[in-house]
Length: 158
Image (cartoon, rainbow, N blue to C red; front, side, top):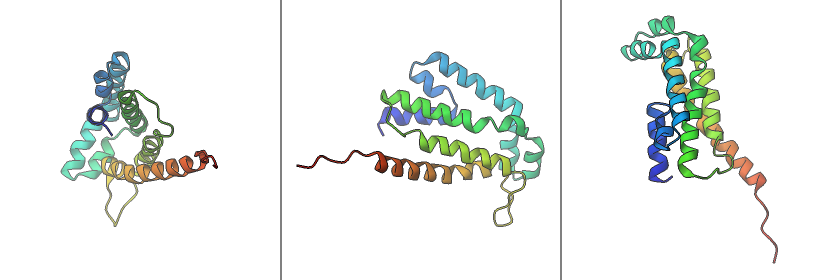
């Protein structure tokens, strides 16, 4: 990964849309920033982050608007993938898979966050979705590797 791609990806992690602005994709960048604020405000994301880091998971669950929160993972990971892809100037096949599966797994993490306990601990609507990214990235890379091997052209016989 080049320094330029890493920079755009990291800014996109900080706030969806920033990577697009750095890539000079202003309309996309402003659209992602608008969506970030729209979803963040309606889902109460900052409030649930606040309560989660204070250890009051039940308050975070109570404040979360899950109808809006379910939009967050897909917008977030799509913005990251888009910034990363645009920064490279090329479209490598299957590079999207770790991003897509991270979004899928994080969405499932959001769904189960009010009830799923890990070692009798309720991680809640911030920490369970974040933990869900790890298997999402792994599954995405595994599927990407399998598909790349399957689609690899056989070398010519001499």
